[in-house]
Length: 586
Image 1: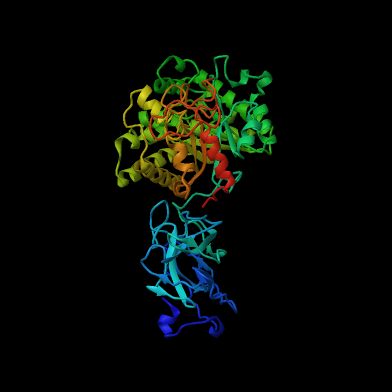
Image 2 (image 1 turned 45 degrees about the horizontal axis):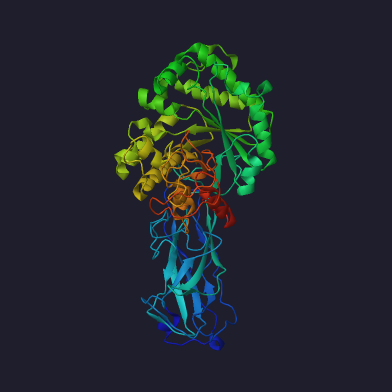
């Protein structure tokens, strides 16, 4: 409300006394937080003097309620006073004259969604704000010059204990931002996180922000970092464990991972290895993908070679301590196991203890034994390695992109995925997941797959799935091998090496970062982009056709920025993201 609407006064600077501020009113504690006690700090009084009579629209901060300590999930009401220090009044309901409070830099950023409140859209919690990026609207129809408006809004404590900041700034909607843009709230979330809350970061995780990475060959780190301060680079380790062509043969004395880790560390980027060895090992490499993987798991000789190969890798990586290395273990394999044997990993045969390897003695010969063997070898030889499970949504035999489940069905499917992971009985550090292994344009025009394009509802279903899965297993998520196509550049015209997709622009050409925020709130900590196979779009000149600008096929009207097959768009967006400041993790 307006102070003078309550008191029947017009306030001038010279006659203003101390302002009594409304304290934050905390709601009842969320259940299950016996160790949490909510409280509110003292209100912050107005300044002794404020400017007045400045021509046009202007505002001056005039005090606010205190900083709260809340229990996870608890709501509170905050109050902030703004003095109309201009010569023009604020007229409610009239574009170009109505005053709002908007989200501001640095947390969450100008016009960006906040984890502390919103209208339930763009990844924000529903706390009654006018919009996800408009914290409050003027509480009275008219706020004249030299009057004080009391803006009130609700915040909700995130489920993860810590300290959060909400920065706000007043504006006249459709006209201009006003002064006193350094106003913020600290919200301290006390207590312990409940089961199902946002998962903690792994102990060795290298960043507190949402990061970007991409596939990168050996000797590519300097050029990668010259483009943008990418946090991750990833490289497949493949070739099979008993074929004579596996990663251990790529350099003398199996030094390939050593060189890759050292190069990454010297360029301040975290190395990620995708360990993809089961598929190309004999005898399963002569069969279909699922049958071949599962046959190899049952073969004692193959699995003995497999664990020996893993041990060698861990020894090479462990020798590079204290560099943190991420090992992404066998994409697709876990999905094939769940598809064939159901949600209990113990039902899937896989030789572990039966190999006779001393370190694995006593482990069961099933998929749980396989997962536990991987963790045991890591613990013994490479404690600097973070192990990543791979979530295959299709392991449930339902593909959300094509079958469009309801929200309730998404929750059930994500719970099934979590149940399968938990049945492994192995403690991975995080989980990888993926959208698709190819650009949507490739799937549509090359493979003839209809329905491969992602729309807003598909992203919403995906974020919900990931959030549920992450909360249940209490692991953060990295999205991996994300297609690099776009709909912006003329170079991307749905021909070989130049196929369209929208995963770059959805996250990194979204000015308010609302899409990115929604995924961060679902537990996603990094986005790693790369080709899933030959002929798909690359942020490089895989086509060897130089700078291309063919006629547009739609809205892709921008000229290429480089010879990269995506027209240089991904590197441009990554550089812009970091230049404006990487978004902090909730």
